[in-house]
Length: 240
Image (cartoon, rainbow, N blue to C red; front, top):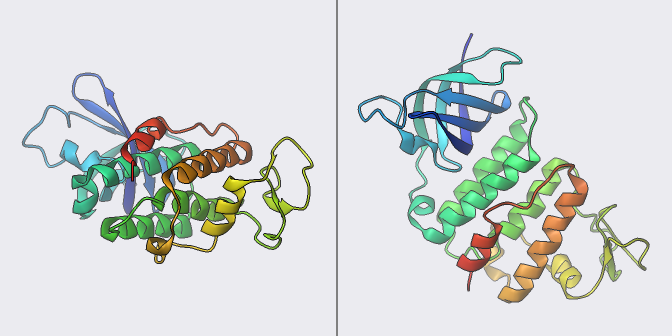
């Protein structure tokens, strides 16, 4: 059975001399893996290796077989070009980070239209954004809402944040309760979104510490979550 759907490229892996194994988050079936034969060698084929950059937005047609680990793409075309993301070193580094986070968080082969739309909205916002210093932090927090562990904002007057329960509280109850500058910054950024992010002011060092806190929160909430390999590059690139 052939399926036509939209998809975001999450990761690629070179295989043999000319093939790629491509993991995509699809609108129709969630996370799927594809074998793309000969794409690294062929210069005249319809399917170009350039299609498979991190978070490329594609229209694909593929042969679907339930419980099959590797599927085969029949047709592919760019659904929308994100020129700014591809050309800007800061945005391209950030898109790689976002893709790695998604790969670590999402494993299900099932459709989730709200999550798919969130990824689409995220990329559209990144494409047009002029300032992106806080973008990855906002992404992680908004993604946590779709994954079911967005921080509870009811008691933000309290000094401690419990990374196990995702709540603010009056005192420390376990070793994953934190207070101090990072928690005050967390409270601050919870009031922002992609649209008003340019109004958010936070020093670089604060952003780095808050990123470490949120990634630890992900590690606690998601079994098997690993800090993205691009984490170190992100720290080095985001110098402003």
